[in-house]
Length: 258
Image (cartoon, rainbow, N blue to C red; front, top):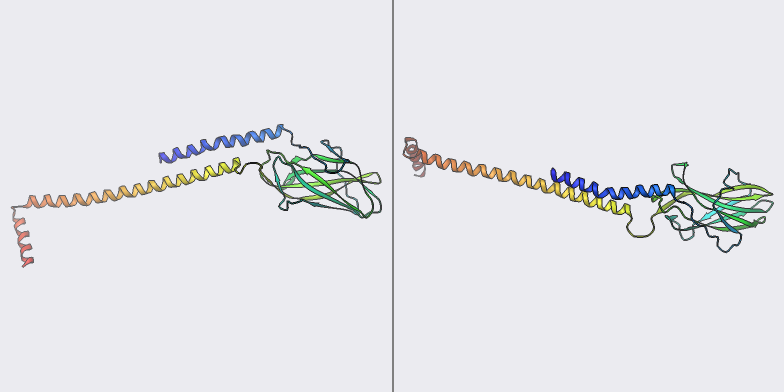
């Protein structure tokens, strides 16, 4: 039992630095900037901004349809701290032109969108206009925080536009993304799980070894008792030699042989 306690304490000491690193990363996330640069491709009208002047509740305009595609990324994997590209398509089925003002997005917990995880950088457009019955595609490049815990999150994206001078917005994506760790093959969490698994295997092996040792000791004790009984019988025979009982027993044994 003492060996089991020592091994358990060793596992706790080994896991404590990893837990401390995770806590430090969480604290750093609260004090660091969660916004990375967004790059507009092949367009001089795209302007990157970090303000939230357009981050207001707006309704959508009838006749404006949106679509979103993650190019070459059907699994919607988003490496933490690295840029991820998606394409936003807008089709104008209305009777007047639509002026695209910007694109914004945010990351939420999947079970409650009220719990905001991160606001992503807004991408503004100065002179992007879509005439009637036409459509256009806009690239949006974003990056989630490098300290974000890997797992499933919900991404909510809006494209903001104006029709006849009045602003509107439409949701182009409201679904799940999978945040994964970037960089090396083994993450801190993976190392912790592997170390914990090895420790549990060692603990199981130690327990099995102690059970085998206990069974072996019990077997040896039984053998010693049998040997002691035989030696006692032999000494009893020597003590009875020359007595009447000894002669009687020897006579009976001879009669059985005859």
